[in-house]
Length: 121
Image 1: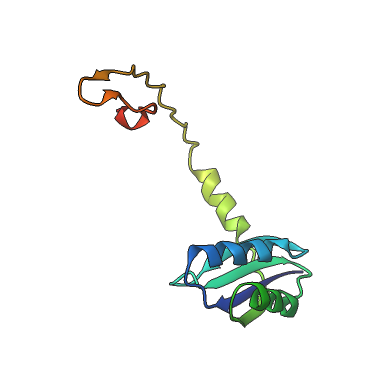
Image 2: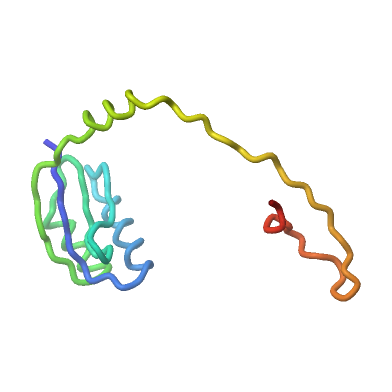
């Protein structure tokens, strides 16, 4: 049985968020880990056989204050997604051709920058 665990944390910086996700993914049995909430301050973990108390303890120890919000069964939303994609025709991707620029000598500054990607277009 897959379970969904939501843990609220006090994360103020992107570094804390990425560290929390690394810890959540490192726990055995995790299939999905992501950030939810308005301020991206909740870690949502979906998997099979996850110890929610151990995960919360690890997050408290390594990152910041963590509070276990909910533990429940994960809902299956895959069947609804498959029916929607089957009705829509596939979309072909577009890849732009490479842009070749030559270095132009500027009389005041010498040669231009070595990367001219921003000048394409």
